[in-house]
Amino acid sequence: MERLTQPEEEAMRGFWHLNGAFIKEVLELLPEPRPPYTTLASTVRNLERKGYLRGEKLGNTFRFTPLIPAEDYRKRFLGTFVGDYFRNSYKELVSFFAKEQKISAEELKEIVRMIEKGEDK
Image (cartoon, rainbow, N blue to C red; front, side, top):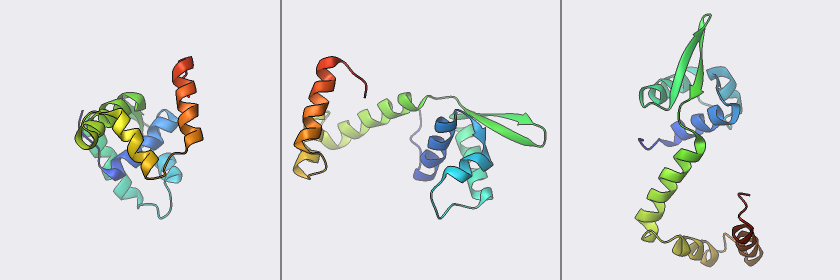
């Protein structure tokens, strides 16, 4: 699985959110300033080439469906990120965010409760 560029990830978030869509539908989900339609279409073709999307011709246009679930992508690249920047230690990752005040003590307690209960969210 190849790492995606920022524009590719943004486009994939749209396809994952909609569980497949036309380029125009994903374009409407992107934050302002939105890229031109042709730029997004090129990004989508790259995603198709990389094996992230499959295009199905419907009339004069294509509808694209994700081939890789969002969760699989997240797991793969979060693991790489933690390995590269935190010596494979999720504890160091959480500690970093706590020190940078990006996560509160209450949020950490909630995470512990979720772990103890075996919850996803």
